[in-house]
Length: 111
View (tube, one colour):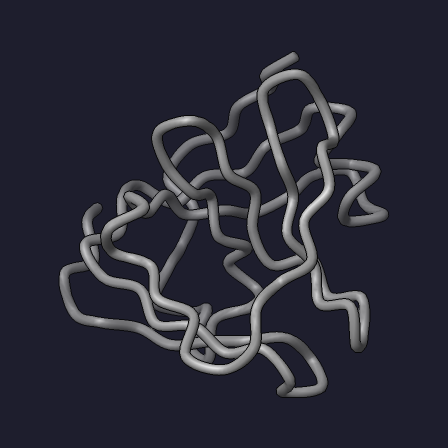
């Protein structure tokens, strides 16, 4: 599935908002880093290229969670929003205003 309609979302308190389009396939990641980031058994994400994600209010706070990934969270309320690699972003599905439109299609376990 690829979502071409622009979709918006943000953190729980509203301090950070984003707009994304041309989204890739929604997925669920079971790796240990995603488990820790979400405090759960998995992290639900959808891929967006860097050119198709725009921060419309505020910016996430970034930290390096592994050799390959930086994670962005709200420094106001702690909501996990995104992680970035050298080529793209993985946006937390639950951060979207209409997460029901992004039903995960695949489950992964990257290390």
